[in-house]
Length: 350
Image (tube, rainbow, N blue to C red):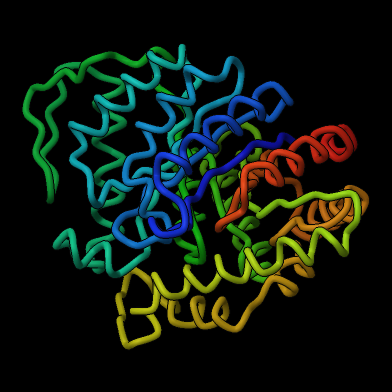
């Protein structure tokens, strides 16, 4: 298994300025690269303190490219529903060049109703916009003189510049949360998958559906899976939980607040059961997330045992993407946690 770090800003301006947050995040990214973490990843969200500091992951990753030497740079993920494919393809190829071919591109449908509302998009168009956007970006990156007439965007005889550094293009990931069709689509298309086991009991059948769709489509190998977890590693497990659990509880609360429309009557055929998903998260807490393996908070021995259990419960997954400074965690404990994990846990799962 490979381990990377993920940045998901969950802070309000009154708690920490964007300048302070990203100064710390870039310092952590540079240290993660030195410690042997294999990717740096960041989200795309808008308007709410849950993720809203990162409206464009490509900007942050371009900065991280200058502070790192080996780690892959992963969009986790860009949102075709809110981006024109012509603009997105050009930005992807530019970052691929700046990073000297270290870019992996994750795409997501988005799932927060307030973002769809503010961009004037319907959640009922989510799947269609997502799949058309990926198809058009793929064409623009792999071909020249592209013509494609979609339902939402039309491209006429266009060659996107710059051309990708990686050939034929950077690796594509599909971000998925709870919809089986998203996992099956990724497997069928031969894309890698990135997922979040916040409701851990749902994860094994979803990952199995991805692997099955991959094999049924005739792709070589078995696919590639990246799962995201919160991380806080300290010498004493009880002290780790006493420090990090309040931060994780606040993170879960802000997620539920950002997605509260699903609990207030919002429905969409493209998001079946999301009221139940968000309700389950509202009922959850840090202790439950640790118990089911969605959060790696504890001593090195406890976290190593959790990783071994997840590999039995979920089956093999190739990448763990670790939130190391979630909610308002300060730089120093995040750095110490990352260093301890790299020293005492990563070698056991190499």
